[in-house]
Image (cartoon, rainbow, N blue to C red):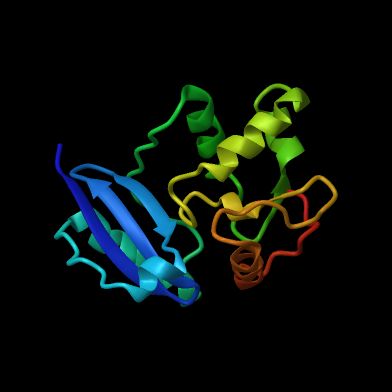
Length: 162
């Protein structure tokens, strides 16, 4: 199956977007080193174009939910965690412990944290809405400053339970 790549310059930096013919596969922040080098030409893909459109609406404050076909590539457990992330409402946060509880056991909290950190579809699958059990901002592959920005953009209060 063909794979397509696109790019979107958002307020937080450059995003690399990957899709196949039927679904969105990945939305990831690019590092500063990559951003300063030349970015290859983007592929033509209806899914990438729709993803960019919905991201623009999100950053402009006109979209709270994404409506895109997603394909999760990971272990069965990672996929369960990522699907659970999609249930966290806009403007709300939850904890790693609560996600573990939702998946059946508080003892899964470390595994949930690891899966959350490997979420390949940033922003769309809102791993930024997961905070530490104490209410602290912890762990975000895009950097904690981006996590804080996204939560503020959504009007979230850090300790607001979901």
